[in-house]
Image (tube, rainbow, N blue to C red):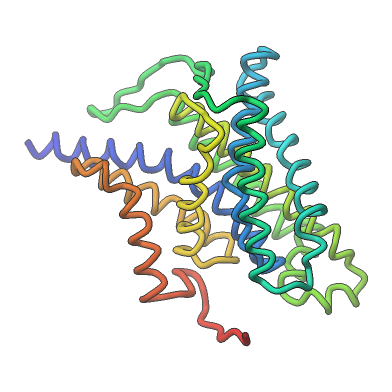
Length: 297
């Protein structure tokens, strides 16, 4: 009896890490953009949807394998992210926060319903990209896809960490997030850095979209809404604007959702995610990794 309970716990951990790694990838985009331009980019979940469709197109129409399709999707969304930033957000750099927020919601709706126009509202099935191999370790079942998803997420997060900490662009990004005006005076082209941040965040969202398609086997033009909001919860949970926080927040949220489903309350999964948001905002608004900084309004 005890061993079967342990098995179930470990099974939920495996499922939770797979789902959590997707949330973490999306949450990273929210956090990076917020860290640099203090904007919650609510269109981020829909960029993930575009990524999922780009990957689907590469796999079904161009007959590419998983890795080239993933890279194609990431490049396509990086370009989309830069275009969105230049057209929609750049003119509002000095506008009020609420104007930028409303624009983000507008961009989100534009992507969703533009997507419906282009690809119709029907649900598409993601082709199986991984062999159906199952691994069983002490009764805990791993799918081949679970392992690839976790590895992909970990590699992408490690690359992001390396970029931000050790490259010239990363140092410039940190400078801009710390003090945009001082960075400008030091000769850093803040516009390029902001575009670069949107490109990286959108590429990570695209990777999450492809992984999500593979994980759930279906995609549709509104698929980005709920994961986008949950990734926002993950970013807030970890401390918005803090990169390690987004990773930890995403993985925690995935694990909590899996545990809730494992307890037989899968209809409550979404409710639990938003309950966490409310609790975090009440108890520790700066998130797990955040410092309490009073903000002048």
